[in-house]
Length: 153
Image (cartoon, rainbow, N blue to C red; front, top):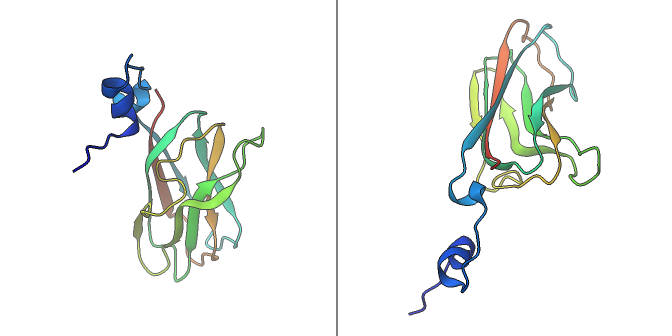
């Protein structure tokens, strides 16, 4: 039976001489990007984008969550990121959450196991954005909240 090691375990405890493991991957502090948006109109169009915040260069994403009130009988949206200004990061409109459906009911959507953003380390600062992939028809005064958990250290 073979004994196998994780990358960081190997660096810290097997390699001679030992190498330092990045603090964010061994004793990192979890940080939260949180924002919310209240819709100022009943009808919001397909392709409308709500800028949520920015993830800093070096952020490694652990989780993304969207929580929304009922937005009428329609209202599907995705959560992802825009391309970085320096071209190091390519846009991914649904890199965290694809197809969260707040049409007909409130919704709390979590990042799926296969999401491109799960565990992703960003090599440049990026805008986080929520994009409507279906129009809303009753969103006036309703809000959507987004939080992203990440490590940076």
